[in-house]
Length: 365
Ligand code: T4K
Image (cartoon, rainbow, N blue to C red):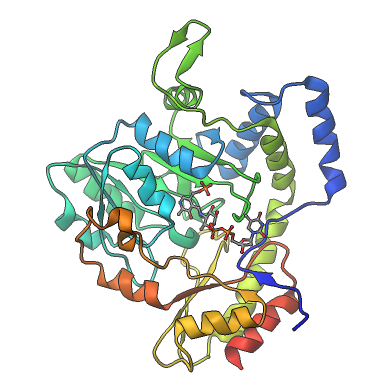
């Protein structure tokens, strides 16, 4: 087997020579970090591109989540999904918050709003849903529950760059949304992330928190953290942004190729995109059910043997990891079943269609 390995994702890399002028500017300015010109330009450009009121850049999505919880002074218990990357739950534990895991909707992989109310206790302060794979949560139902019980809503929107519902960016919902710009994401700055917030006052507070709580040389207003994005990362983001529409439209082609070739395969449950506005085609999840000719794990190994590194995002569930066992005796049968059947196929902004076809041939064969 001499074929090139195919990973679940690959970062979108524009031609290297397009990055050189950005580096020259950084060298000339000697401003490497701390809200430099690239950082300011990227914030303005992303605000426009995403159509959101305010955005604060971060050095990664996890620190953005941690800071979002700090900014709203969240404590006690927070309702979240067990079907996510560990950073979702870890951001709660690192803030001394107890995660309460609630089951997911079998069509969207997202927190099921109908199950939220039963998990609310006097200690509940917030809901932290995840727009899993970039599928929008049922934001209206979640907001209604939050309003009824006076809870905050912080979206883990790590996967949701550029996703829109009928009214605009999905990131405008809830009190805050945290995004990831990690190398594996639709839009990447190598490492990076952001918090989307509703107004300039909240942004100022978040900007203070991500810079140690420093307001000026002699005033520190909060026990903040170092969450700043460097100039190199911001510069790469500016360059990425020039290519983002092309990258997303390539992802859509890959997505449609999988849909049309795998839709009829017995034992594979395929999901049409459910954004109802604009999708970002961040992942291609499928469920391997009992009618497929192999189990999910056999298929995962079979693909690896052929150089295809599909991933079981998200298996095991958050609640199954040892650091969560004490926290959540919750019943989440839908999430458990989906976690046992899930497989995410390779998709990215630059994957060749021939490579996608190699994956299809093995799955359908
Ligand atoms: N919330 C949610 C819901 C998230 O999914 C994430 C991150 C976060 C919060 C936290 O955001 P960040 O703090 O990360 O900004 C990856 C990513 O590291 C992680 O960002 C992402 N979610 C998660 C779903 O996937 P791993 O452990 O699977 O990554 P890794 O290194 O195995 O990479 C996957 C594949 O990507 C590799 O097989 C090859 C390819 N790859 C990866 C990297 C890093 C490349 O081709 N180039 C690269 O530079 O977690």
